[in-house]
Length: 166
Image 1: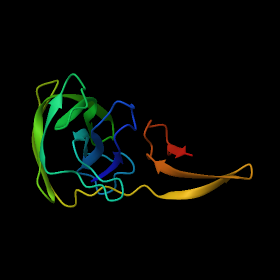
Image 2: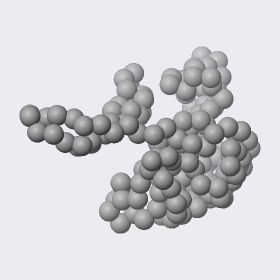
Image 3: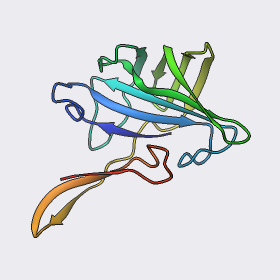
C-alpha cells in the first residue's frame, strides 16, 4: 500500500475532513505499471487524522457518487481500478458502489465497477501513510518553511510529479 494524507482545508478552505488517497496493488513494485496486475486507487475521507503520523482511521467507507468529501466516504472522481494484461495494456474502470472497512492493520472491501465486475479484496499490512518531509528552503535569500510531495508518475507521462509548497 502507498498513499498520501491531506489535512482539512488542503483542497478547499471549507473542507473539515481528512483525506487519505491510497493505492492497493497486486504488484510488488507500484512505482510503475507491470503486466498482469491490479491497481486500486481509493480516495478516503475521515473525520479524524494526524498530519504528523497519518494512519487511516478504523471504520467503514462507502463510495459517494456525489463526491461530498463527507467523513466515511470514498470519493468517486479519483477512485478507480486499473488492470494490466500480459502485454501491459492498461484498462481503467470506474467504481460505482461498494464499501471498505478499515480495522487496525487490515482493509477489506467489496466494490463494483461500472461494467459490473465485483471486486472483493483483503489487505493485511500497515494502514500508516508516508510522512511528508518538511524542511526549510531558501529562495532569493529569503527563508521559507515548506514541504515537497512526490506523487510518482501521477499523470502517466514517464516522469515523477512533485509539488513544492512554501
